[in-house]
Length: 480
Image 1 (spheres, helix red, strand yellow):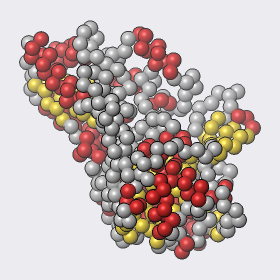
Image 2 (tube, helix red, strand yellow; image 1 turned 45 degrees about the vertical axis):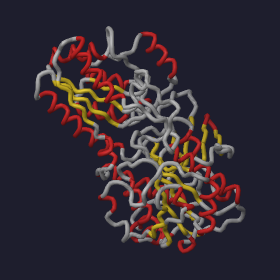
Image 3 (cartoon, helix red, strand yellow; image 1 turned 30 degrees about the vertical axis):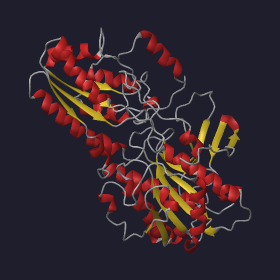
Image 4 (tube, one colour; image 1 turned 180 degrees about the vertical axis):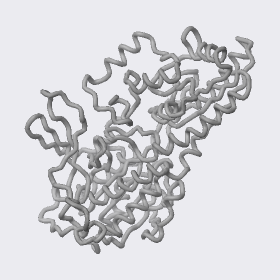
C-alpha cells in the first residue's frame, strides 16, 4: 500500500445534555463554503408518494448502546441514515463511480446493483462508472459504464462484475484520477483495509477542496468490522457452512471412529465458525482464534477427541482458519499478502495430520478422518434472500448520504437502524468473539466441549471486557 499514513482529520464530536455524544460524519459544507442545495427528487417520485415522513430529520441519531442504566449517560450516537429533504447535487451534475476491493464475499454484486439502481431510479443519475480491478483500476484507467440494464441480473451471481484486487492503493494517483475524470461521488466497497484506504482518499480530497463525496460500504465475510451489527454476506456464509458441516457429519457417522474436520473462514474473528456450529448442532468441537487451545495433556484436544469417540463413535470438528496459529514451530509472522494481512499457516490441515499421527502411533486407535475446506466455495456463492435485502438497504443508505452531502463515512446497521459512521470508528480495531460472553457459553453448552481455558486465563479475559454491555441483538456476541 503506497500510502501508509493514517487519517488526521479531527473527529467531529457533538455533545448534549445527559452525557449525549454524537460522533458525526464530515459534510461537504465543512470545507466548501456557500454550497447550493436542491429539493430532493424523491418528493416527486410516485413510488414514495405513499410514504409518510419519508425524509429523515437532520437531528435524528442512533445510539450505539441500547441498554443503559437509569442514572448513566446517554452515550455515543451516530447520525441516522436515510434521505434528506435537501440534497447537495443536481441529478445531471452527479458523476459517480463504484469500486470493489479485497477478497470476495456474497452480496458484492447486489450492493453494486442497488447503488446503480438507487442513483438512477431515485435520483435520476445517469453517469455511473465501475472501476475495474480494485484501487489500482483508478489509475490504470479501467472503467465499466453502469446502468440498470447492465446490472439487472448480477445479484444472481457470485463474485463482483467489477473485478477486485488486494493492495494497489496510491492515494495521490487515485485522487488525480477522480479529479481528472470529473467524478464527484465515490462508493468504495471493502473491508477494514479498504475502508482505511477510503479514509485516506477522503483526506486528500478534502485537502484539495474538491466537491467529491467518499462513501464506504463495509464488506467482510468474517464479520470482523466493529460498531456495525453485522456485515453483508455473513448470513449467507453461515448458511453455506452448514452444507460442509452436514457433509462432515454424514461422513463421520457412517464409519467407526469417523472424524470430520471442517475448515471455515475467520482470520482473526471466529464468528462464522461459532454461528455455523450453533446453527448446526452436529458439531462436537469448535476452535476459533479468540479461544486458545492445546493438543496434548489433560484437558487437551486429543483427550477430548478420544472421550467423544468412546461415547459416540464419531465426531465433527470445526476450525476457523486463524485458530491455533501459535501452535507448532513454523512461523509466518513476517509474511504478508498484498493488502498487508499476515499470512496464516494452514493449522486446520496441520491439526488433522497431528490427530492421525496421535491416534495411530501413540494411542493405537484406528480412526477415519475426512478433511473438508469449503472456504473459497462459500466466498463465491450469490447472497441469500436475507443478505440481498440487507445489501439493498446498505446501498440505498449510502446513496442517500452521498446525495445529502455527507462524506468520509461508512454506511452500516447499528442496533437495527441504518447509520453513517465516521471512517475512524470502522478502522480503529477488529470486532472479535468475546469468549467470556454468553454467546460463547451457549456454544460450549451445545457442543459440550471443554473451554480449553485455565482459571487464570478466564480471569484475564474477564478483566479485558468493559463492565457495561449492550443488548443482545443476535449478532454482536460481545453484547450478549
